Length: 525
Image 1 (cartoon, rainbow, N blue to C red):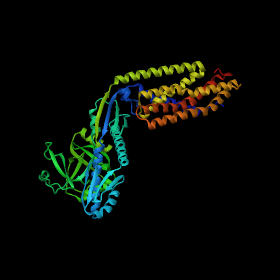
Image 2: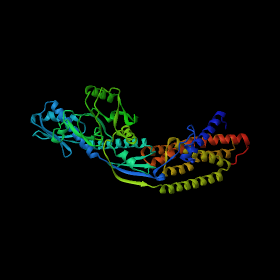
Image 3: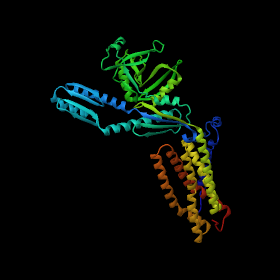
Image 4: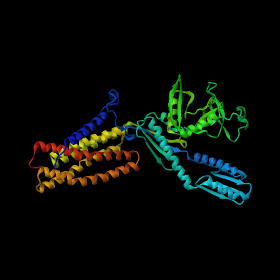
């Protein structure tokens, strides 16, 4: 029987009212919403690059230097392992994209080859009878490393851009070594480029106190150390100082878990925290090297080299320097997001103006209005009063689509508008199935209540099957697509999910009220 408990009716009406409340902020400006109390919903739908305008970047990832660094690291590992096994060698160095070397005793060549093959996975090792050998990475290992670098770069870019306040950026891989980045609503690209372009590779290394500064230009730097530049804070004049630091990294930036800017007695500093492993290593290093200098290195430049006054074992510390509030905030953001695994080069940059977005919004509004009007005319012409009930459900369907997008902080794109237009037609599809089934039951001589009850019950399987298959397609589009394609998938999927509520539960509630009020003896449908 067509019956609905009071609690269910109240719940349906409450859900519809909640959708209206969450949707209403989209009809006000941000300035107006800033004046309302904090407990009032104020989240709005963002506009995508094609509607709002913004910045478009094409970035090239510097993979070749990373592979070169990996070869250098591999050569260091091979030398250390050969020394450990007391195998004498003439040279182990990087030449033309490969690690080449030679052992002094040809009889040690096989043992050396076994050591080299164990040094790292994905190596192609060749040797000659004279004791020389050559090591390169296999094409599979190179391709896997490229994929890892690109995926890591995309994730770090996403973290940096999201923390800077940009909504729904488009960040996708293009080809073997490029990344497409689109930022809706961005007009001034300089701050974004400054944040994106920095590698932000942070390291803590000990200063080699045994090498005087005067010996730097005379070739007196030992192999385990290197010379890095940094700002000489002692002079206060911004002069470039040089530091001799050990190549060994005490703690790397990957161990950082948080970084925040703080004002300490008028001076801006950056507080940082390590994870458990990094905290232990930092504690051990500062305990063993009291009264020695510890260099804080960012992107191969020393930003500070303080003297370790006492062990630092709390898992946290501070970075001091001549920071402003902007530079301290930017450094903290970069450290939280993590270091890029490779350098990024801007090879294409353009700004999309809002004029195109205004035309697109106008075209989308016209398409939505025309599509909705045609659906309304069709439903009224075919089903009369019952068509009007379906139109009410269609209205709340659109309300909840916009409400859900507002809550999720999703961006509306031109394909997203296309998804809404498609939703307008699909949202009444369930009502068409129900009403056609009711017509069949009326022709078979059923009473109005019995016909309506049977229509809703027997059309349910077809409604679920049709909407479920479309929803699966929308989920696949969202998972595998990117940018505007995901915008289309979001609006389409939300429309389908909401239509299952509005087209079935809401229309059923209205019809139950109508039956109790009119108590009809026949159905004109």
